[in-house]
Every structure is written in structure tokens, then in C-alpha cells.
Length: 196
Image 1 (cartoon, one colour):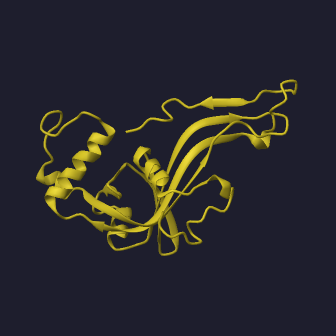
Image 2: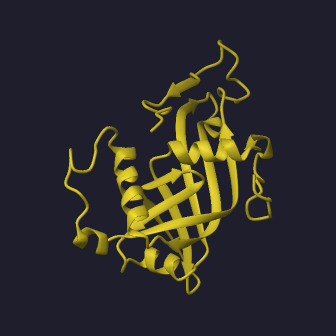
Image 3: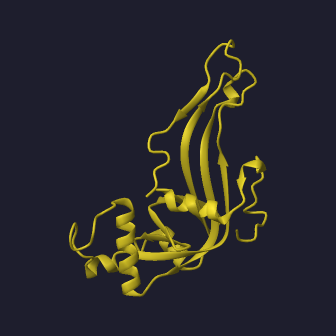
């Protein structure tokens, strides 16, 4: 794991922190949506992105004129968060309802990928990640010159990363008592453990 500072240290429920960078990277590799946060003139923004995490690199793509891409291209610090939802946790106590999850948060900066061969390879890998088995030139047309110009590809250099997870059943004071009123249990989410 990269050195942890105050911004990446798990404070609430520190016992849920996952100490290994491998754990954090596994979450990035499995997640389907990255929430990308940055600040412009003191105003925070967060937007969802499809993404690719491969070989220790986090790749984002978007329209060159888009605010997020423009800010990151100009060197704005970025925070990226990915969460995997595994199950809903029902409790007999209202405040003890919860969610089993795994999440990773990373901080870094981005650089534009300008090399056309690298850009093509990464964009094709991004498509294959969400649509396994599809190949350029077979299942869809090769990326055109116009499409190349219409998309910016960013490589986020991860300076710090942390991960956190909750697992297990309900923790309410009455949840282990089968004679208590109400109900409690774990409700698995479909495709929660999907690996892409």
C-alpha cells in the first residue's frame, strides 16, 4: 500500500480497513463504476465513469471538452472511489440495518495518453472489459479517426490508496435472539461478486 496520510486513513470503523494494496486493487479491478471527484474554484464535483484498472493503472476516458477531463488534463488532484455491494443486512433494530461492501478510494493526478497505439489498445481493452469476448474489427468497427479525436484517455497516477470492507451478519442487540420480534438476516445482492 502507498504511504497513508490523513486523507486516506480509515477513521470510522478502522477495523474494517483492508491493509493490503492487493485488496484495494482487486476492488478496482472488479468494480463497474468509478466515482471521480475533483474541485474547481472551491466547488466540489463528483461524476460516475466507466473505467479500466489494469497493470496498476487506472484509465478514464471522456470528451476532451468535458469539465472533468479538462480539469484532470490540467493537473487537478483527483479522488476516485469504487464500491462493490455484496449484501443488504436486515436487523431487528432500525439503526443496525447495514450493507456488506468492499470499497477502494485512491488519490492522484492524471496524464493524457497521446500515443495512438497505446490509446487504441486501452480503449479496446475497456470495451472488452464491459463486453467480454467482443473484438474490434469482428464485433464492432475499428476505432475511427473521428472517434480518436472525440475521446481523451487519461491515466490516473495513484499516489495513495485505501480500502475498507464490511462483511458478516446483523449486529443489533436483538438479532441473535430468535424469539425477539421482527426479523434479521443477510440478503445477497445478485451478481455482487461478479468479476470482469
